[in-house]
Image 1 (cartoon, rainbow, N blue to C red):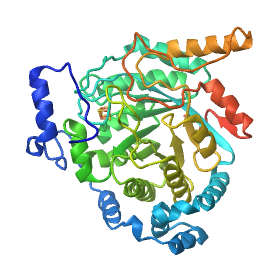
Image 2 (image 1 turned 180 degrees about the vertical axis):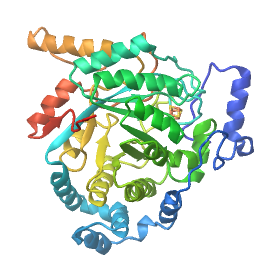
Image 3 (image 1 turned 45 degrees about the vertical axis):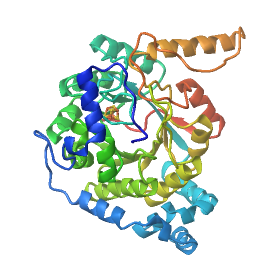
Length: 435
Ligand code: SF4
């Protein structure tokens, strides 16, 4: 039985039957390595190189001497990267942190970049067994219309935010490319930087979204182990592992400025997934030197209707090790740490390896106005000393359900102040578009 499965109680008998067969009968599922109709195939050797390196990687074979040698080298080779990700490197966390911190300082100074995500919709056609938005989970679904998108973006822009990350569930039917394009155009009028985290698409579609104002595209591969991937992504377009893998390259072919990479740590062997994520970025950077590369490092979080889901064996120490190894191997790459992680961890890791953190986050649909108003009320109450601030949660009673629980609910204002108080420089934009 898969530990991640969600018990959906309100499905029709037919849907329940299909769900049950998908979960228990591998022969009922489609071939996850076969492209579906309409999926663009590109000629690229990046996938082969990443998979080859990942399959040949045995983390437990690396020794203390390998780690010391990797730390002593001026630049980090692939072999060094493997050593830094291995269990042998965990006792060297202090040394890793110091080296990572030096690299971060060299390339990013003491800046910390802030952005916020906006979920436009939570419809999804995929069956990822660990995700609260999956098509078999019984949740309130919602899609923002044009007016609601404008209203949400205005509220966020009024808070001072200059970069937005647009997300949808992965449903072409509910959130087609034109819909996402219109959202990009609105975003362009409110923000200096527009990112996308939507379903993978073909290069001509990425080109269209670039023309609409999108700057970068992030796609989570979830796990680079295609066999494990097959057992977790049981239905929908997302099931096709190689098409997902090639998303960033298609986005660059479509003219996107930047691309983001990530595995969802805890789904499979996290050391191999971290290696593959770093190498995926590394090989594409070599092929497309102009591309702005960034990495994320999400761990599993509890989700609606299944609170037992949590990071498996990826503790904060291991996460810190991975982030330091990323920084040392890819000194120029942006590294984002999301609100899945607790405030204390995020406050610490921005001094070591991370360059970008989200603020004012809601993973629900259409509830920024409500949440931001609550934040304003709290700040006002604080100022007038009517009462002190307690928790920061807000319920989105009129909105769509959330994708997963977040651990850091701090507003932009609060994060900005706290980062500055640490002697770091909070940054809302680092790019000037002269066109
Ligand atoms: S992880 Fe993404 S694609 Fe999978 S069910 Fe959730 S929203 Fe849909």
